[in-house]
Image 1 (cartoon, rainbow, N blue to C red):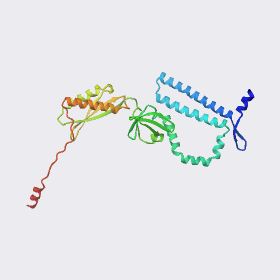
Image 2: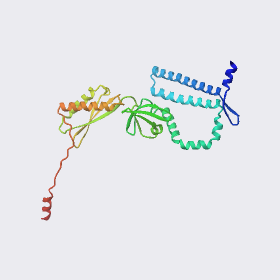
Image 3: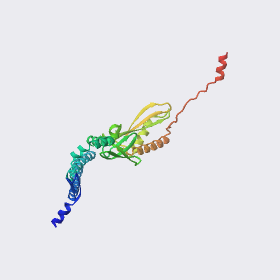
Length: 288
């Protein structure tokens, strides 16, 4: 029985370098065991991190970043050990493949740049899973930060796959970097002659009635300017609903329009005074 198992383990799959190196079935089994152990270690680490996140109320993004970096480290070590057990000496391969590596480096420079950016994002945690960000005018929620790409879901439930280098080199707004509460603005103009105190009261009333507008800090009104055709106001309010904020703004606009109609407050349209010059009279005056 033992001899039969030994024959199976020592079964040669192939050899190279004139028979100096062999790859046997036992090496493959050992490599599989190594990856299974690495997977088990990562599962254990993930449980520990999740437990500490719940128990000590650690930021979920920080726990995710720690797990991702740890998983990359564990799998890198496992792959290197697997090559070594399989008989592939990494130093020899690198030394004998310099030209190939140079060609790969030139062809995959964007990929390497994304990998470096991925490590930067995971280490600095400037962007992490669950954050609401704005990239090139598109607002979305970060689903996953990988080593090369980041997955973002937009407000239209469209999944965008962004290269990590785009997030480190471009201008990115992180709405949740300083917390889950953010201030938003809604602009509205009313006709000249309107009761400004009443306008302020109605705007605040519309904001306070919405259940997803925070009571603290309280909404406030700014009288922005005397516009060309209207008195310009700005409703400032705070909300924890960052991802679907456009829906809240729409609800507020409906409510404001209804209240304005009930209290005879007019939202004006742009107006222009047109003066027509009588060129005939001008020409007569010029000839005289």
